[in-house]
Amino acid sequence: MGYEETVRMLFEMLEQANRADHTNDEDRKDWQRPHDSGQSNYYGHIYNAIKAIAGTAILDHHSDTWEVDMSLADRN
Image (spheres, rainbow, N blue to C red):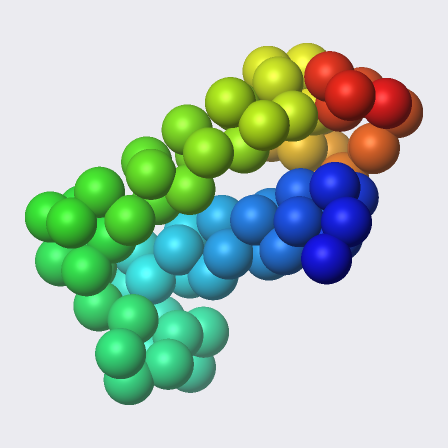
């Protein structure tokens, strides 16, 4: 797996962790419970991995647009 695929996979995991906090049962799977994300810091660990690997610019852009712009990654 290359750099871009890894970063995109981490963003998919970040979105999945975000859904774990959702109160609508239809938007989350059985294993995704609010305590999973909050108590285990699941979201935070993934966020920090993206920050370490790709930088804050790509995270800020994703936060604003929900898009992954690889041109903002530190190694591109």
